[in-house]
Length: 337
Length: 199
Image (cartoon, rainbow over the protein chains, first blue to last red):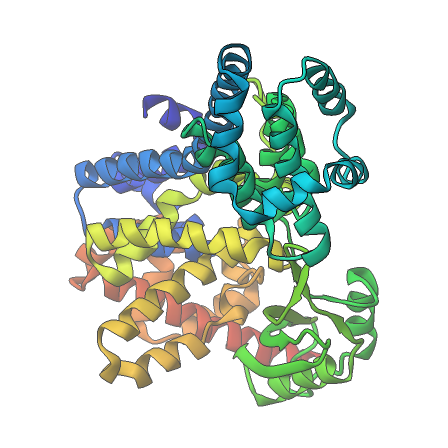
């Protein structure tokens, strides 16, 4: 953590020196004057007086480590996820190739039929339409051409597998929502020769559920294009992080303008003085403002004026999280200048 | 999405720039960079209220989690003072859950979250290059003895808290509160004189 300390800017090391009692009396006075103007540092200094300088250093050090760990934590998970998907995809593709070359056709088709159940058998009967569906469902052309090639080899098992996959797609197209998992299961079953597949299917389904482009992502994964799959994963994580808080329909600038133009200064606020009120309220999905509360205020006149400004002000757009509108609390600070 | 590996010689960015970047990207690294500058202050304030090292360290991390959620939602004009308020509120909430029978006291403290006192307002006496203003000097004379003495020694004799405490045989905390109260009285006195001057 030495680096950390060197990096810190001047006021901090000054702060540290003060806490450690390394200052002369004059320097102390100068610093205390600063503290008089800086309530944050003032309170912090008071807090540090509860413990010894050694303990303080120790704790700050530990906090630095904890913070770094916290920041690194989430990134690592993303990397692990990407790495895991890539690894699993590579296993599948090698197993897939291996099986296609070595296993007799009859054995393979057995393997696919038994677990996949009725739906697969059904879709096998309608092999032709199923393939069309798969075309509609944005199957990358590589897959198709690959499938065609393999059809030429007249390996019976291959059509069975391809049937199973589009049937998953078909189910999705029909039910639209909530079938991601089912589709994933079907693919997993169709390819049951390798137990690793189940893991990918789950993994892919989980990530894909967030992206809401199940078919596309799934097929990308199936094409063993590890890179594309990786991008999808980061995208999912990114989407999760993106969150739009509630905001005034007029936009922030116009809202500020509205506040400054309509604000009525309470009579008891002396000219040149300023005061702030913090209010909290929930913006409902409908845009309605609910549960308006004053969090902090110098007085009733201020509170009432702040409430009035919010209630009479422009309408609000609700917060959007992962693409869906939600009820959300927001806070607003209104400054009386 | 490209992962960024910022070079070591990145220029020190302002709080506002970092807040903007965090709000738009959600990159924890940016928030961490910003927070690490203030972590010792947050920890100090937590120590002041919670008086427990482990609890305070946990609080520092909890407050970081809070920032992740709150920052994108809010328009923050002054991160430093905003963080101070967040920290204080967090600690007071902790204390409140710790002993709910003290609720009245805590509510009172929360309400008097003195924006006026703590805001960007600069007390005349804290103004570094103040000349010994006649009005100010006059007002100082009118203060109670102990307050007057503290103000005089702190601002005009450049003595630190501990020296004043020793000189006057009072507690250091008493010195601070004398300064605080003395300043409040001075402000009132000066404002009163201003009013009269206008009339």
